[in-house]
Length: 260
Length: 279
Image (tube, rainbow over all chains, first blue to last red; front, top):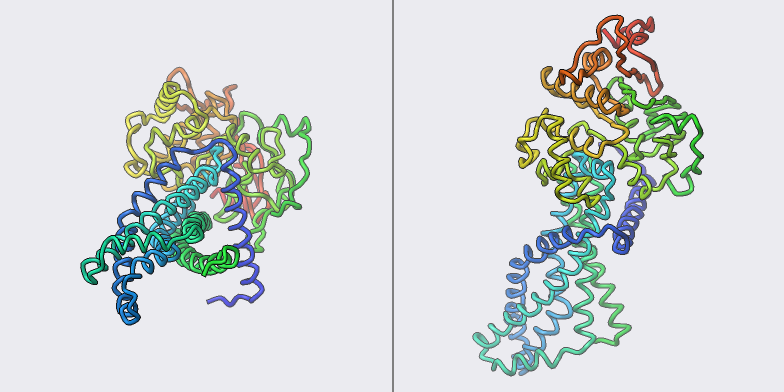
């Protein structure tokens, strides 16, 4: 294996960050330029949104249920079992809903985007598109970015609701809690800041999924092996970025919205 | 190339505006390896120039640079009078609509049918559907593949894919065509069919073209034949005939131009490298 100097590695990382920023900026700027590819955007929304519905529902329900199950022991010890609804609701809406949907959709779609665009790149289809007078960023990246951003918001809302449903199933049938009590504590514990946090996070995560997936796809080189590498890198980078951004964004909102 | 390195646009002079493509002292390196070093050549209107050279000599790079898919490190490139390497990508998209390119591996969009592939440019330009259908069929008839209109590229053979790529490139009747090894990996019969299409495009529509190839017999075929419109077939130019096949040869060697001229000079060259290359 060839040894590379540390400065070369740093330059490579810095230029990758620069290229990513330029691509993301260009994709956003294209929202205000013609032509707009509405059909492509709707097709991507269908693929990302409807296609990910099953996996998001299953994980949301399981996590909501297991959250109620795991917390019941501790809550019972302090005689606060009635707060199960509040615990599940706050956890799902503020944190688990967005991050789980983000990670699930990242695993499914950023890899899909990277492999699709990567295959197009290595078979010169991207160059062919440019040669035919079409901007690949406008035609391929912007629709994916818009779709992943908005569909993740919708998927997160569904995930939150299904998660609460999973929590209710355990609370009602396994812990013997009254349904009204569960839903009223779940509903009343939520304040504007919680919902704001829960609904803005998926917008950020969706943007990360779309932009990272497309970036790695368009940067793919070296045949089918390169496409495989790009796919893996896209999933890893998008997932890590989602978790890191989640931490800093949560901290930021806690400071500005005085959340506890 | 950073923004500060983009050269200032130079006005097209009488010389550059009347040529289809002009390369003026162009150099490019990849990974610190010089691929093209200070090369200059011109492509006249209606002419087909065949780019020859060993693997990795930069032939495909020349095609990509000609339409701004790759930027040179130094030098100036003019396409239809436009200073390509001084233009922004957004401006290049408009210019590229006057150019058709056939990629080495065809580069057809594999998720689209033959119809959608050939019609791609027209769909992007919002041409009415009836007009699109008529022109797609006309282009596919030109390459004799009208029956494949509803098939996907994966269902076609290599030669058929190459012909669909030619149909896609010519559908908008471009002023310039760039062919990247259009006959590579094909059997001799299919190669001749493709060459006949290129000769037809050259002699019937008088389109200027740059053609990268490794197959010398194909280049000799192009330079020694013309398209007989009456009989709808390619024929050899009889000795002493006034018919001309506007073709020339450009041979690259170690990043430099080893030869640039017509067939007669090429085959009669006394240069040792050229003689070795031809043999």
